[in-house]
Image 1 (cartoon, rainbow, N blue to C red):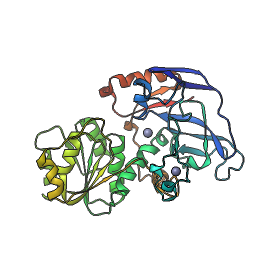
Image 2 (cartoon, protein in one colour; image 1 turned 180 degrees about the vertical axis):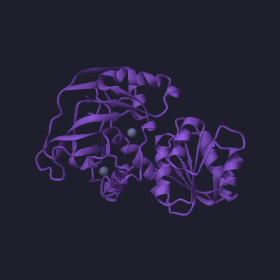
Image 3 (cartoon, rainbow, N blue to C red; image 1 turned 90 degrees about the vertical axis):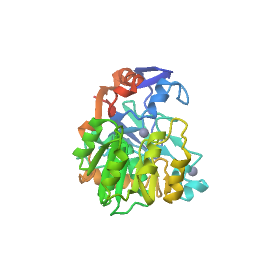
Image 4 (cartoon, rainbow, N blue to C red; image 1 turned 60 degrees about the vertical axis):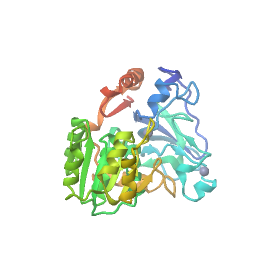
Length: 348
Ligand SMILES: [Zn+2]
Ligand SMILES: [Zn+2]
């Protein structure tokens, strides 16, 4: 088969690659579309791959082409995506349901062959079947949708509260939709990119604030009657957004940290004191799994995409490339500020 193979740093080429083997318990999937995740960019461009040569890619959709011995839950032709983490399901953390903390795990598309290929074989348990009414290009968005949902579920979200979503990247836009699905009183989004704020508005959020503008904290707080936000989801995770989260938070608010920092984060004494004074409850989250694996994040995403409560807009997709154009797709990220949304690699 053909694949986009990473041979070394910044050396991704369309090439022949061995067909995946199909041992018992695995399913072989004909890949239709893959997304380039933020985590793939350093793997390709900045020496971040575990080894070479490797085929990356973990956000994808396709159809079951063949099932290995003993596979019972899937059949040829099913439309599927994958939960990319492969936990051991035997260690203390796995047995306790802390799937994301498993230390004996593997990961599709970073430790083992990924989806930037014509075919991929994955364990039956990792395959997530979805309704064929969801397009292949939209189903690529499963993983970011589950990560956003994790950020909502993990902070004990319940309906009726003012909710702030910081960052209108893919995860932020899904978090805003989940907040509505779970009954938020209002949803306000924050970003410096007016185009992305427009996308959020089209999805039905109540308020969209330009966080590069002076006075936006006051305006946004005003939108809650001056009380602040009961839930704040930071889908970015840089110094400015973390400080914004603390400022937007109401007393006893729940702040959910979904985005992960790429740089040192520091707070002034006054900023830090906001946590004390407002008795803010801060919760981190990591990946998007719960027991039984892969968990309700994946089940709910499949259901809500199928019935239309969770929407993927075409505007979430920035650009599409064929698999043999993978190099051009990654070259885009050499200037990340020109990328506004998900870049897809499509097969056939
Ligand atoms: Zn990803
Ligand atoms: Zn484990």
